[in-house]
Length: 224
Image 1 (cartoon, rainbow, N blue to C red):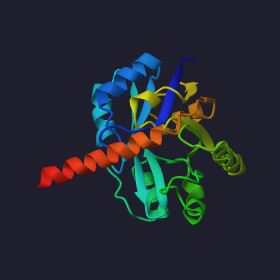
Image 2 (cartoon, rainbow, N blue to C red; image 1 turned 180 degrees about the vertical axis):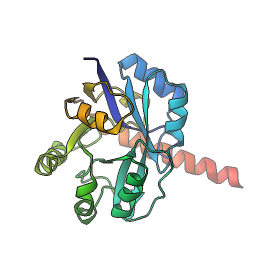
Image 3 (tube, rainbow, N blue to C red; image 1 turned 135 degrees about the vertical axis):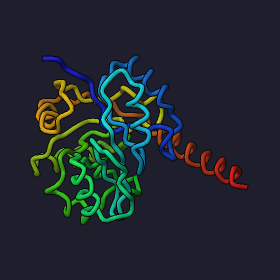
């Protein structure tokens, strides 16, 4: 059985808080042995499409969508999902594309876009997988709460870097059997996965903030 190293939550320069180019991401993946990634830029699949067009390994088209009740990831998408809809409306739109629903960092107490309790409760029947280890979570207990929730609700689990910078790529990943581009086969493979955990240093959040401010200033001057 061929095994792959997969990370299902990575951002590129197509996100406002990342400056990582597709080429840089691909190079780091090859260097660290990642051969399956989901590119999940904020509210757009354009970064994923770009990476998929040039990467020599498997790339899942995804997006981290800002619903009115917090962030939700759609995987295997074909079109952008509009932001600012309710959590339930968002996951239904993902399902309309035959996509998978993943909930990112569901209990991280320090991020302002974490899904709310009401939002999470409303989409439980639609959730395919849950991040039970997000390398950017500062508190271990927040990852543990995600694991407990996944077990309680019989959800598939994964470990991700949530990379916004090249230094994060390859630290955390899920080892799982290879799969073709079939949703059911993917879910079956993920159910046999093993998470390799490595926490990122908290300063990586500062990198995201810096990128967001830098891009905002650049866009302001460009519009003058």
